[in-house]
Image (tube, rainbow, N blue to C red; front, side, top):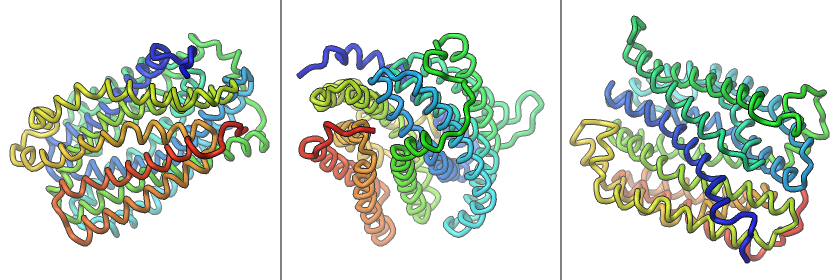
Amino acid sequence: MKSAEFSRRKIWNITYPVLISLLMEHLIGMTDTAFMGHVGEVELGASAIAGIYYMVLYMLGFGFSVGAEILMARRNGERQYRSIGNIFFQGSVILLAIAAAVTLLSYTVSPVLLRAILSSPAIYDATTSYIDLRIWGLFFSLTACMFRAFYMATTRTSILTLNGIVMVLSNVVLNYLFVFGKLGLPAMGIAGAALGSTISEFISVLFFVLYTRTRTDYKRYGLFRITRLSPLIQKQIFRVSGWTTVQYFISSATWLFFFLAIEHLGERPLAISNIVRSISAFFYMFVSAFASTGTAIVSNLMGKGKPHEVVPVCFRIMKMCAAAILPLFLLAMAFPELIMRIFTNNGFLIASAVPSMRVMLLIYVLNVPAYVFFLAVSGTGNTRQAFFIELAATILYVAYICLIAVWLRSDIAVCWTSDAVYALVLLVLSYAYLKKANWQTRKI
């Protein structure tokens, strides 16, 4: 049965601003990688470890905001608009507390942890110089997460495009100035990339605040109201967000585990994986945009009392996502060297990375349906079930990496097949839940 409310046009109108914003966010990572590729091979490899290490810490807050988004979307579907502002404020306070705790933890624990798990002293020095400055961006990036959650929940996503453009332009300019030392500034190398990204996130939050105050009917939703902390509302948020917080943390931690395993194979395999990861992230943003739209739509449908429309909408989103990435997929498969020259001019490095890139691309045949169904599970409100699905996929993923990368020390292209194991488990378990489980009357 087709939903007149969430037709292909409506889905696309919600998705494309999210896609553009994710493209802009990805360009920040691409900017760091591209600049490091022209600084040195050690810096290129270290930026992979440092970037993913930061992402693991960031995901503690981002996962929380996803849970808040699901709750706000449900209230939006139920037309309880004033409740959205309460969730936004209480969630923002919690996220700032998370940012403070993680920053303190990073300065006390990260040097010891990274020294223990990294085998290359050069990689360690470059990674810590990045993390020490980048970690302060958490306060801004997690605040931006709540704004993103609000606009996703209310299906008013056009602002995300503008914000993404502002952030990436700021990051490109600031990276150029700080990394290479332009306009009289000292050349900071990888630390300059961290500083540039942190400042660009501050600019992003400032843009969100100004736009929301001037272009959004914020009083309707009760935004920017400073109220007393409510244990009742916070408990309600944690009931949904607690599982997504742990889920997203584990998901990003597995990426860190993958790159740590590759780092022990050598600096060149690590540099190759960083290039392939950056290209993979470009394709993943399409999947993430459509699947995240699916989460918001599913939660809205549940709030409107239309659970029978959930699975048909998932299939519609899946087909649209596949159609969107197909031309890019074919281009990347046919001309991998051309794309990799964005990140490095090292011909041997490019030739070595081609097999890994093609393996990564083929896995998107599984990634598209896997992530659409998986995030739909979260959209139904059963974030606990989504966590256990993620946990099952993670356990098999880590076991597979231990086998092929740590024990067998396989070629880097073979190591990238681990993503197929992860996606397959997500796909099978998520689809089984949506077809067999009793989720249609779940309340949050």
